[in-house]
Length: 248
Length: 227
Image (cartoon, rainbow over all chains, first blue to last red; front, side, top):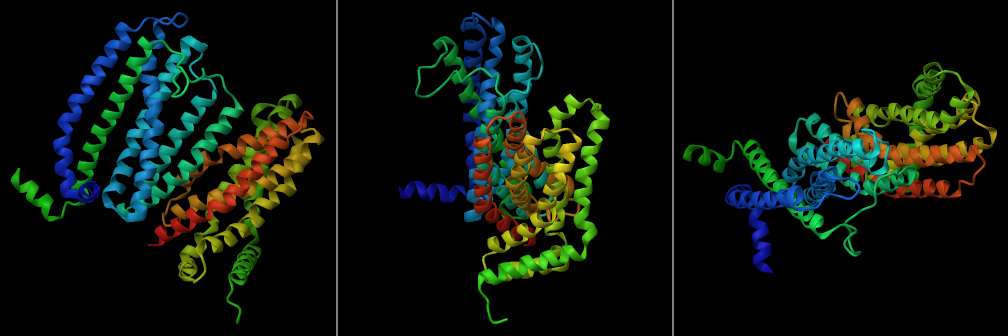
């Protein structure tokens, strides 16, 4: 237990994190590529075509993992923002703010693929369906976080302000989700649930889960890259960055 | 003053803010005028067919109320921020979240409550059936305080910025979605004579939630904005 606390304690120091992330990155990249390639092969080649939707259902392998990521990243952002607010850990503030653009991109991707999928299935690019609409509102929440961060000049103050906003958003997301759901829904029900037997063929399900893992790994890679970059910018005047620059 | 209790502080802050807005009456009237003008624009834009206007009336009134509240939000902390009294407020021995509640209350009394006075008139102009009128007033009574409370978080985050207005709308409007949905849905159903108790209960629940939770992030955000 003590080892673990010590590890996290050391991890929160910028130079240690910078080196640790640098060592982690190649491994993550290999792992991510492995999951991505097997997932894509399984999803696009091995999985049988849907009896109703034909081959067009295969967009699920991008759409559903992106939609999962969009919520997951918001949670990560809020939690690490909260940690940053409580314990004033600079690193978790940076993790929170670096997550925002990635999350917004995944949300955008989920919206675009959803709309592309909607065209052959529902006959229109956009329907005011509950889940599409709450995903759109989630995108607005992300954009609000990014806009607030870029509007405040002092970046430490900005990080704390956006952390509060992310926490407020986390309380509101379920309320928004259910209010919109209640307002109007046309979306197909969830096909993957934890406790119930999934209403999806196993050959279709496995690639989907592989893709979900690949997307999570991709998020970790991009997050580490962005965090390393942000650390260098913020600590530009510190000793370890100068030593790093000189050693290059 | 020998009495330094929290309730006196709350009362004096409320009274001070109300007095200030009575002295600056024009500022308080502007959101109301905005509310009326926006609603007047809709028949001009979508055409004056009575059935259409009647169908969109609940949504239009509520969207206009949302925008009017949002535009008036900036006045909540702005002048106090500029003359430094907000800093004095944060230095006080009382919990800031309670003092914030007094300011939000004053803001609602000046900008939210008057909406209820003109809303029936505008609803009549749009041809909303009279059986929906009472529900409209109840939704405004329950909903507009929530708008002020959630808005206060957004204003507290942006009060230090010179051009906070546009960002404020981006921060606050997505959070207004549930209120808009429940309130306009309630008015719509009430106009057709269906019972709307669930919607009103949900609005009341949101009000209770916002009253208890919203002042805390507002206080934290004010501390950050003034640091």
